[in-house]
Image 1: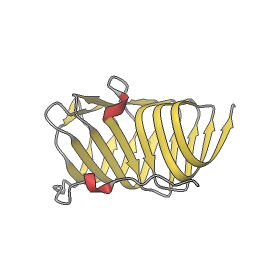
Image 2: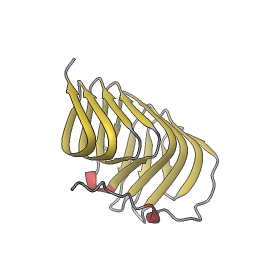
Image 3: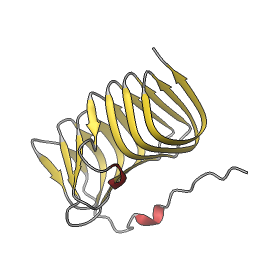
Image 4: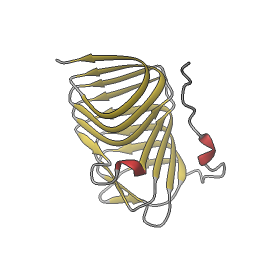
Length: 168
């Protein structure tokens, strides 16, 4: 029988500092863990894991530019509600795929318009859409989701309820 994966939420400290809203500026670097209400990545963001793992929890997130991970530890980004990814952008392009985890707890997730994603994507919702030149390298864990890849590529493993592949 099929057993869906369980995402281990115990990795998230219960005492993360509440840091409010965040918008990227020129050459912005995050190197410590924290909770944000809203994160807006409109210019490149670097997550520096040189000294330790960096765990970032956001209630809402908008990504329209690059996120780079540097260092040998892990970067874990957890979005509790809505995340919007609209390219062109690359996520973790210059680093090891195994050191970046994106956990999305929203009902649906839309990836659109020339996005390159390198790492592990954990999706807890029901609908995951990747449309118009989305390239995912790594693994997608979406055990209860209906996943639609349209004019997109997946290099790695996927765990999902249903999978629809189309070329446009």
